[in-house]
Amino acid sequence: MIFCLASDPTQCRTIDPMIPDTDPLTMSSCPIAGQIESAKWINDHPKYELQRIRCTVGKRIKQQGA
Image (cartoon, rainbow, N blue to C red; front, top):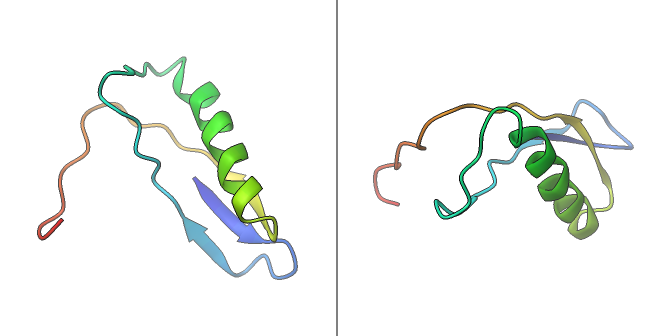
């Protein structure tokens, strides 16, 4: 999900929500889950607006050191 400051749309943040493996997502359910997760994020960060949701299929690759 990409969120940008409402006051300065050039200042954006990319957020990758962590959805538990127990909640399988499909390409049809991902946009709905994205709306729910983005609403939660905006509730905690009211100065931002949602610009984009992108869904991908497959498990997330773990980052080194994480």
